[in-house]
Amino acid sequence: MQASLNGSAAPAIGSDALAWVLGVPDSREFVAEHLGRAWMHAPTDEPGRFADLLSLAQLDEVLGTFGLKHPSIRLVRAEQDIPTHEYVWRDGLVDPAQVARLFAEGATVIFGGLHDRHEGMRRLCSALTRQICARSQTNIYLTPPASQGFKPHWDTHDVYVLQIEGSKRWRVYSGGPELPLEDQKFDPDKDQPGDVEAELELSAGEVLYIPRGIMHAAVTRDEISLHVTLGVMAYTWSHLLVDCLGELAGRSDAWRANVPLGFARMPEAGLVAQLASMVERLRSDVDIGTVAAERQRAFEASFRPRVEDSLRQAVRAGSVGTSDVIRWRSGVGGRIEQRNGRVALVGVPREVELPAAATATLEILLRGEPVRAGELGDGLDWESRRVVLSTLIREGFVAAKPDASEGRA
Image 1 (cartoon, rainbow, N blue to C red):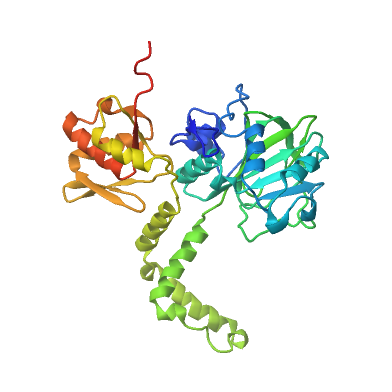
Image 2 (image 1 turned 120 degrees about the vertical axis):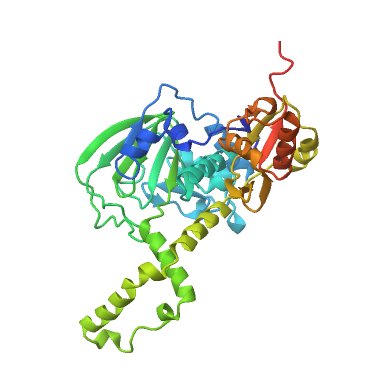
């Protein structure tokens, strides 16, 4: 647990973010049986397990001190947006007192995009995004007692509902589309819910996973409800194919050429034949390896690590000791590549080359668990390990801290 940007605690999520979210030992069973396929309710006997992630008190602090603007905060009542003139000052700044008044009168307060400002939300999104390799975002819903939320609907992204405080009653319906894409927007006039498949109470500390396309709705009980809706955007095979076509069009004038003049009036068979001929060549023309590597690099580059102690760590790098606790920095990516008898740690925006003997050191640290410098178990002598650790600290991949347990009785 570490201090967040606004002074509160922030959770240490670890490499299996899905398991942390769901409160299970590991996520393999969830991935095999539920991810992208079926909704899942993850109960718990630890109602306070998200206390380090977010609380009503922290949200109150965010509201009063962060200088948020609309639409970073929206107020909704009975599914209708409350007019902004009721709670927004000049230049779009939100009036915390008016927000609080409207909440007390029955309005739901929606905090959007706090994953870029609140450390707990940032860590949650960063860890899940890195594991799943898909963009994630948060919306936070603070709902007054006995208030109807949004009516039955489906989303074009997977949703993890983390109940932070209070409780909410959820219903899951049949009738949603199969794996909708982002341009297939929900239409309340056309998309009607089917039968209720399940009804459940989501209590503090519990999670509800809802894949894209599954119809759902919620209502609060007789207490305030605070929950985080963590959305994970799909990156599909169709997206990857579009990226491949984009790369091909960039180097092939055949794919940049116009379709035949007057194609709408030409015989359908002729147009189909020409397109089919071009599609047949795709397998040999598309540079799948280049596109896949570029998408992986772009994904890693999308992370913006927040580091609060770069200067102090740079100074500490020269004096790292065997009792120091070493930990991979949260939100910092890296992968190992073997190069001509050496090992490279490739990150964004930098990479480091080290002797091949440092491979085991990197593999251990990349697991993300804190470990004493003198107990890494990488087979290196201390002086060699110290040089490796000092380099990684200076380059911002890992951080060293004194062992807090030292000196205790």
